[in-house]
Length: 449
Image 1 (cartoon, rainbow, N blue to C red):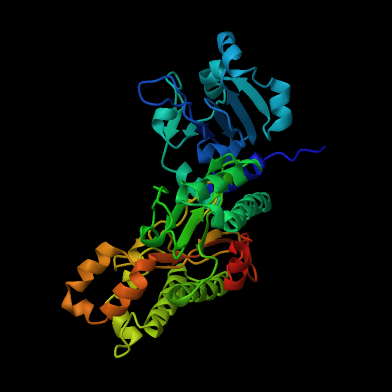
Image 2: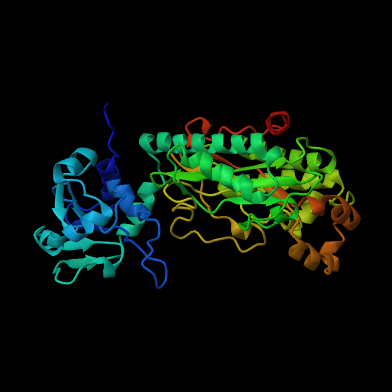
C-alpha cells in the first residue's frame, strides 16, 4: 500500500517564498511532553502547529532546520535513553523516519548545536529566541518568520483540504449519531460521550476544542462546556451541539441545534428558521473577494428581520434605526465565523495593519479580510438570549424601547439560543462545504425521531 507523506517541503517552499531570502536557516522547536502539576502523570501530547506544518512530525522533543540556500530539511529527533525504551517503546529508526516523513536528513538531538553551527548560514530565523540552544553562534532573527508562516498557512493546499474534508466527515457522522441517539439520553454528558466515541473510533483521538453540549438556556452561553445538566423531563428543550474533532492536528468545527422532543414546534421552530435563513444567506455570500464583515452584517440583518417578524423587535422601528443603536448585536453577539486549519481558530484573521472593529457585536469578529481561494473558514450565525446582556439592556431606556419584553421573556428567552455552523473552502466559483450534517428541519426531525 502506498503511503502519501505529509507535504512538509511543499509547505516550506511557501514559507521561504514569503521570506524572499536566498540564504539563511529556518529553525523550529517542536513541543515537549508536559506533566500534571506536581505529579509524574503525563498530559496528552499535541504537536505545536507550526512545527507540524513544516514537518508532519507528531512526536515530542524534536527540532527542524531548513536551509534556504540548499533547500535541505533536517529533522532532529530526540535521542531516547535506553532506560526509557522499556517505558515508552522503541523509537523509529533513521531509515523508517526517512520513509515516513518528507525530510532529507535525520539527526539526533545530541547533535543539535553542531548541526546548526555547521550550516554556515549567516542568520537563523526562528519564532522565539529562547528556542535557540546555548552555543549557537549564528545571528538570530525573530522578526520575519512568524509572518511568513501565517501567510503560508492561510492558503490550504489540496492535501490539507482533503485532510480537512476527512475530519469534517468524521465529525459530521458523529453529529448524526448524536441526533439519532439523543432520544435515549437523559443529560448533556451522554451526548458528549457519544460524540467523543464516534470520532475516536474512526481515528480522531483528540477534540479541536472542548465540546459544547448546551440544552435550553445553557445555549445562550457561547462557550458553555460544563455539559452536565439533565434534560427536561418533557423533552421540550432545544440542545445545541458545538463539537469538532481533529485528525493529525487538523481541526473541524461544527454546530447543530436539535429538538430533544424530535420536533421543532412553536417558537423553537420560528427561532431555528431565522438562524437557518441567516446561515443559508451567509453561505451563499462566501466567494472570492467577499469582505468578511459584509457577510457578518448580512447575517446580522437577516437575523434582525426575523426577530422583528417574530415580535421580539418592535415593528414601529426600522431595522436601520435599530442597527444604528446596535440592538441586533444583543442577539448575535459573536462573529459570523473564523479561519480554521491546524488550529480551530486558525492564524491569519487579521492581516498586518488591519485593526479589530470597536463597535459592539462586530468587535468580536475573529477575522477581517476579503476571502481568497484556498481559505477554509467557518460560517456560524446564531441567535442567543443572554440574560446578563438583556437585563442590562432592559435598564437602558434608549435601547429597551426597541424590544417587546413580554414576547422576549415569556416566549424566546427560555429557548436559550440556536447556532448552525459549517466549515467551507473558498473556491474560484464560490465555496465547497466540507460539513455534511443535515441542517434542514425535516432532515433533523427524521434523525432525532
